Image 1 (cartoon, rainbow, N blue to C red):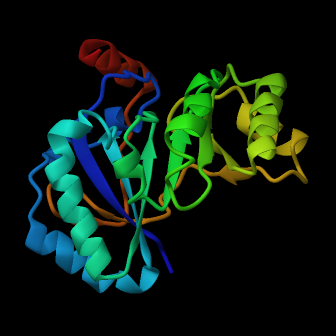
Image 2: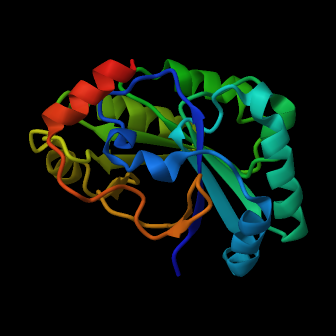
Length: 226
C-alpha cells in the first residue's frame, strides 16, 4: 500500500544543483490548490493514516505567508484522523507549527548545522523523532556518513541515504551501502514510492518527468534559476 504525499510549490532559495525540480514538467507545478480535490484525495486515502508534505522547492519556504494553506491542511487532516509529516531543509523556529507535525524529515548535505538546529527548534514539539535524509553525491565520503550516523544514533533519530537522480554519483551510493551494511541506515533508491497530489491538483504515481534530459541541461537550468 503506497503512502501519499502532497507536493507544494511555494518556492525555494537553496538552489541545490541536484534538485529534482530541474527535471519536471513546469505545468504540473503551478500552485493553485483546489481544496475540494485535495480533501477528496485525502479522504480516498485516509486509511494510510498519514500524509507527507514535500515540494517543488521547500514546503516551509515563506512559511508565514503560507500559514493559511497549512492551517487548512491541518484542519482537514484532523477531521480525517491523519498525521502530517513534512520534508524540508529549513528547521524553522516555529513551535506552534511543529506541535501540529508528526515527523520532520530534514534534508542535509555534509554540514550538520541544520540538524543541530533541529534539536532546538523541532524536536521538543513534533510528535515523532526526526529523520535526516542525505542525497549521496560524488562528494559523499565514509567519514561524513559516520558523522551523520553518530549524530542520529546519539539522539535516536533515523538516517536515510538517498540515491542521486540523473547525475553520476561515482558509485558512492553503492559504496556506502556496502560499507554501512548492518547499520540502521535506510537506503532509498531513485524511484517513485508515493501517490502524489500535485500543485496543479492532479494525482500521479510518478513525481518527475522520466523523459531524458542531460545533466548538462539540468545544470544550466539550475544556474539560470539561482
